[in-house]
Amino acid sequence: MARTRVRISSLLALSTALALTAGCGNSTDPKPATDSSARAGAAAAGKDKPAVVVTTTWEGAFAKAAGAEDIKVIVPQSVHHAPDYDPKPSDLAAVAKADFVLYAPFEPYAAKIKEAAGSKAKLVEVNLDNDPDKVKAEVDKLAGVFGTQDAATKWKTGFDAEYGTLNKELQAAWPGGKSPSVVAQVFTGWAAKLAGATTVGTYGPEAVTPAQLAELSAKKPSLVLDNAHMSTGTVLPDSGAKQVKIVNYPGEDLDLLPVYRTAAGELKKAMGGS
Image (cartoon, rainbow, N blue to C red):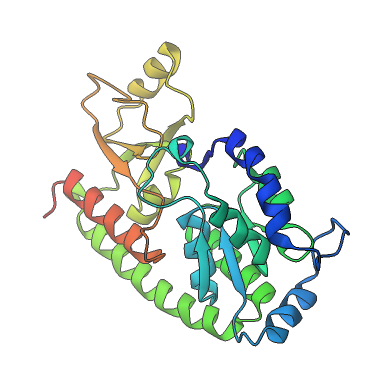
């Protein structure tokens, strides 16, 4: 989740540009619009689907799964270290024109995104977690906000089928037919669940301390599920555990399913499968 930081000074510098872009027609009331008023605004503008601005591709994938089609991502997926990205005036102008703005509470620039949204956009906080139950709960929530429940229901059906297939394939790849024991970074527990693995310990987001190293190594895990976006290097050196990089963020296509397929492929390789 280290990718989620944006240089706050850049956001401060662009606040004036946002005010100019928003124009004099905006209300001075700082409160976000209600769901119904945001949808009404979209309809008045002649749009069948709301304009949605998201901070990263992760929120974008949730929005797409929920049925949104007009989605603008602020931090490009190609930026692996988000503090290196300077938001452009066009990025924040998109926020000013949006019907909905999606952000995660742990993102340090969320407060500035709220200011950038002005009075028009509905601000929606998203719980970013690839655990399947949490994903579907967020998709349902967003579909209720967007008014796209039918699209979300269809997506969830396809998601359940794909997830079930990957889960069965991974269980079939268990070494010796036994669930592997894993140590997971706090944001990769969903991948252990996908594999049907037995989680014997967690770490992070900070680097493992010497005491944690001794404790986790003593549990003799066969796999360590590292967070590719905030890796701290080799977590349990000399423990014999294979370290697997787990990617949380979707690509620029904002498709969440490849995240699970990629994780399944890496896990299968680590377990000795093809």
